[in-house]
Amino acid sequence: MKTSRAAVLTQYEAPLELKEFPLPQAIEPGAALVKVKLAGICGTDVHLWHGQLPIPLPVILGHETVGVIEEMGDGLTHDWTGAPLSVGDRIGWSSSINCNECYYCRTKPQPTRCLKRKAYGISYDCSVAPHLLGGYADYIYLRPGTAIFKIPEELPTEAVVGAGCALVTSLHGAERISVQMGDTVVIQGSGPVGLASLAVAKASGAATIVMLGGPPHRLELAKRFGADVCIDISTTSIEERKTRVLDLSGGFGVDVVLECVGIPEAVVEGVELCRDGGRYLVLGHYGNAGSVAFNPHVITRKQLTVAGSWGFEPRHTNAALKFLARNREQFPFEQLVAKQFPLERAFEALQATASWTTAKSAIAP
Ligand SMILES: [Zn+2]
Ligand SMILES: [Zn+2]
Image (cartoon, rainbow, N blue to C red):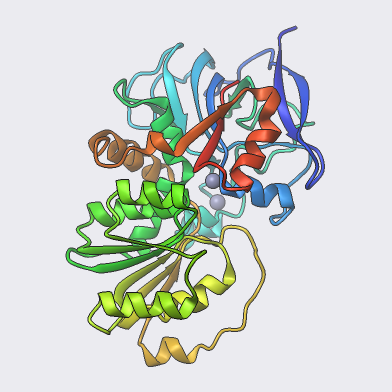
């Protein structure tokens, strides 16, 4: 029987364990067995490792993965866009599958809040067959109903993994609070979501973009992606940053602030950087990082529009791949994948992302 290795989270905040699982003996109709080429390590994986979201254990993490089709089930002939699929194709896929039947799928369309939504690398107990439902492994099994996308030949695997779930998250967020032509924008956070939001804001016609973040290697990337001003949060106070932003916006504050940090205090700071009538998007709080004292008076007084955005849909994955192919020169997402680790060093890769020593790390099994 053929097997696949996988790096398994068996206990929160403990090292990942390398285990072997049997490959499925038969591929269901509509499903696919995929050989993993590169599995990105997302900041969310760090939150999951800390136990900040309710997930089953043991679990194979990894929800931003690129692989090559090894075997296809009956009936799987085309990708989500209608392009023909065959064994050997390099593909990406939307990390979650919706039920298309529940209250949030049908009645009040908020599909990313589907009541039965399950995500690869997050929601599947790997002790249960077909086991291989996360990216930190030699193989991943894509269930029937997965939105699969053939990756254009000219697009490097590293660019797709570098953009990871950050670009799709940002594209979804942009539907809720969008940057308009000529807007002044502050982005809080220079991690993958912040950099992706920077790319989307730039492509949407922002006039001035201020990046608040760190460490310096991430701010370097922000500059490369087109940030007009980068402010290192480790060497400035909240008051200093506010003064800089007000100075840069005629004393009024900016049109749009995008929160891509995931630290509750950032929201308190961020709303103060909006002009009156400005827009504030909370995008970085995928994990539950706790609460903070907050004075809602600021929302009323400034007449703010505040929105949140959760996850993404297959149409965002489609849009992200097109965005990447179109804007490769301007936004080199492949540079985010600064370090690749073999599968047996998956835990080291996770720690590299956790400690911000790289923009992003990835596992190449
Ligand atoms: Zn993610
Ligand atoms: Zn549903």
